[in-house]
Image 1 (spheres, rainbow, N blue to C red):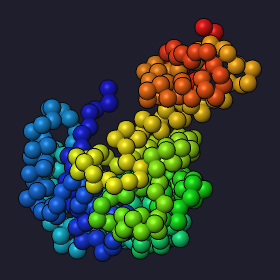
Image 2: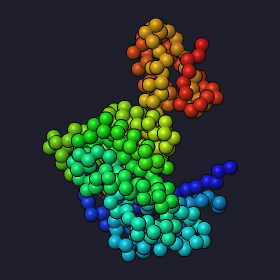
Image 3: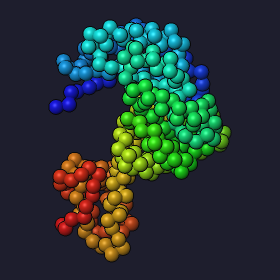
Image 4: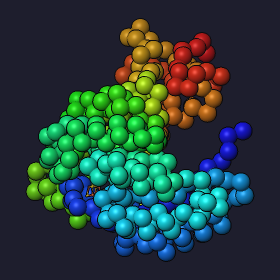
Length: 336
Ligand code: SF4
């Protein structure tokens, strides 16, 4: 049996980050206002451990901000606070997220010493113009070098990309996904752009200088991106911003914010497979699809969206689903 693992999160909102990317308001994204201290780290681990059942392996995760852009002494203070818990087995390992241009050999040595196992790189795009217009302050080459160094040093590598950034196009996002597959990350996170209040992007949008990346745009594009990563056997560990109360209550002013974005994308991928099994000759037919166990709701779509779309597009009489033991994501036509 695979041992259970759990994440103990510590948010380092904007701590030490020398940039202001147009889309970023880390304080609002993480729902926290003040930077984390070594005391916060100890408290998070102690409280997190107390909530977890015996025998559950725990990972301490520093999320938000750019961990390795913090002055070295402060990085060490946060990591040192976690060290006793690592040594006594309260936590198994540490993961953190950072920027590509805040990675070098010395930094990686420090992370290794303190038991960091996973490094997440916020790359966002491999397109130079998109990075410039988003004021990322690093180049595609920085991202490629950092990814290779992180992997080369034996860390687990997670790459983060965004869709719908200023100057972005679906083709550019697909090219970023393909480039990621060459870098062989252990996982990816895909974040369609959300327009968050108090960010330069919000002002650009209000001034008509940025076209919103809608939920529909994101669903369509991320369905294709998911196929690229699936084919390359690279797990998507997250799709879409984690919903928070603040974002849901209005901090997410526009863009691709949806609490169930991952499910919408999954359903869209099913829709493509279902369409591929239908032709004009099916007009007026009763159609029955077989899908893997537990997948009927994804294959049918939220509020039966896929079934209704197919009925409309192919003038079908009924669209129904049945479950069988099948490879995941497979769809077959069966006799009713
Ligand atoms: S590098 Fe990260 S933390 Fe810094 S501004 Fe950009 S998105 Fe925000």
